[in-house]
Image 1 (cartoon, helix red, strand yellow):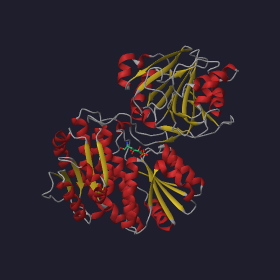
Image 2 (cartoon, rainbow, N blue to C red):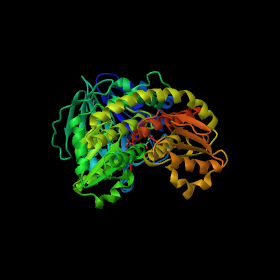
Image 3 (cartoon, helix red, strand yellow):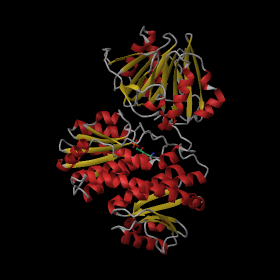
Image 4 (cartoon, rainbow, N blue to C red):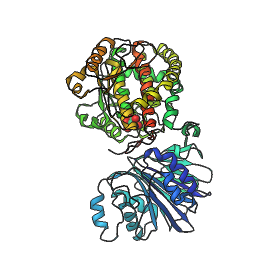
Length: 590
Ligand code: AGP
């Protein structure tokens, strides 16, 4: 996970890298550091803490020089300590490296290198500067040494390296971790994502696995592992820098929840031909398998119901981290629909690569343009919802749902009607946000002392229960379970005590009566019932009112009050919903 960024140009590099690191903080935030090159000397500052904390202590932006690299960490190997923070260097402090990924063979490499060099950290990453040192001592240039070093690495990496002997140069390499180059005028950038340098340029080159990139002001050269130059034209990305700012909101998550009506309309901006083709693929292909992780898997679960309920097509959902274990059953008659906001989730990429190797066709539903998943896929449908910075996915979830509605309606040749319905739902979503936004803070205050929450629903609404529970877990740090309401009596009911919150998602649809029976069972054991419905019931201790919509659309409206409740619970508990502990936005490790 971790975020990396490098700058090479005429301006003072450290302030630009520092600003970029703040944009990358969603990828990890337990420690941070910057190294710069100034008059042939290498300077470095790093420490434990969020970027603002490290900056307050060390004034990272004050490092001199026109070339710099930076890192924000999400610890995998080695605890959260100053020594384990990046950048890491060789023994002579002449080569500095930042790394995102995991070096799987770091132990044997370390044992060998420790005979020559002394290590100061517990990280897997520290082998990289020592390996580069070894090759440079044998006469290699920085670029050649990086190329030789990565041949010895197993695992995943995006690496940036600078050397005192080659001023004004950054060498970068990647395998299975994202890396993108930005071309400005007289300056260049290289980072884990476009957002970190979007303020300066939107002309980008996506680096592919196995490529080695050399940046020297605005001169960027790309080579393959054998040293052959690869010509590549930059492409433009049309995300706006303002999309990555809070625009007056206290937290990104709040802003992103409030943006959902707009996000729904943006998700409608699709090439209709592409949606129709994808829908035909779903209908024609013998086996349709959906995959995703976390929130994106919950969207896929709702997609599965839509394909069945609207399009009459059975499909299955396999969670991203387990998907590759099913590769034996994935073949050329399989359509894999991979759902991912970031398009960089390692668990998804691994399964998709195996499926592709087995001959499956890949359709992806992705937000980040040019992401690894998008580039691996045969067809890509983009969410178009702009950058999502809050670690908890919100607007990307509703956008993913919109794409599933479009596909399902296209399957029955009613794409236009589906689009029209979602457009009017976006207006209702605004009202839904305003109504529940006003009552949720008080409800959260009353619930902030509770540690266990159970979310129940049936049919198409059950994945909404799972998604709402995930939101509460990750940002409010409570034990929350989402489950099909009918499952409650098969075990979990034993956990219901006096005043245990049970959140019942029970719109007035085909699931209502059966879910209400389960509500009664919980109520009889003393549960505190919060009903999410367009119909108020006596058994509800609290009512989160949602608008009445056509049955299939309830997931789109019932998630809204529950996103707000999770957010308000986090705020009531004094937590930072944008940066929950131990998590990161883009999970690029397995
Ligand atoms: C959602 O709130 C989570 N932070 C997480 O579960 C996320 O949805 C998951 O990691 C998948 O990410 P992706 O959509 O970028 O692949």
